[in-house]
Length: 297
Image (cartoon, rainbow, N blue to C red):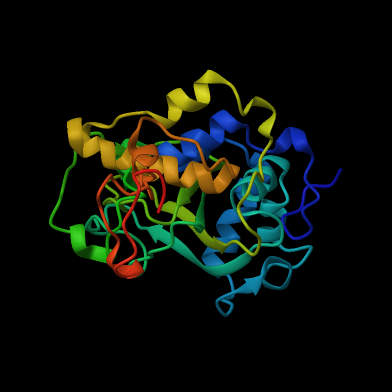
């Protein structure tokens, strides 16, 4: 079966597993190390140096990146197509793309930020594909991100004053690595202190279908799914971390259609809204005759 994000023809074996999807929900990222063949990585440098034509927001993948082009070849790689369909579904729209090149011994470290303005969606999300055609070393200042922050809503550079947070990671990876990020994750590019340029190509995708069970759900009942969703991070210890568990449980309900799912008693407690009146109580909306008998309103 041909892998293609524009048609949705992706073999089930290339889709993400439930454990991998749980990792994305808890960490805000999914990583494919060295998935792009070296022959493509070698061609990528000329493509990125030349530049890739921009397209209006919401352009379908097949229009933005037609067959025969380098970007479409990248997106049609089975593992990449499988991850993309698992996260945003078939035929996603291209929000925008960008080529980022940090010159040797150049560039300033970005402030910590979230991409674009505050996004209040809780029932959908965009993903950002980040492709690294060359190896990224620590000295090259790969992208810094803070796992688990993607569901803590911020507006662009509102967190720019924070220079370091516990649990943050600096990306290092082999050539040909593709990383998928939730659009809300806190991150920032670092300064390149090496003698080699650092290349990264980014595409943000919008879903065009409901993000419901788009991955391989054969392992949906694996205990590791719940354990992964309950991952704690150093930047949000103790009671602060509970908010992240609540947000993840809400997102997992959206993604699975299981509206009873909970990681503790948080969401279950929110549904406690009894309608039965206590003995002797009255409901003013029912007038003088609205006294309750204790057993029903």
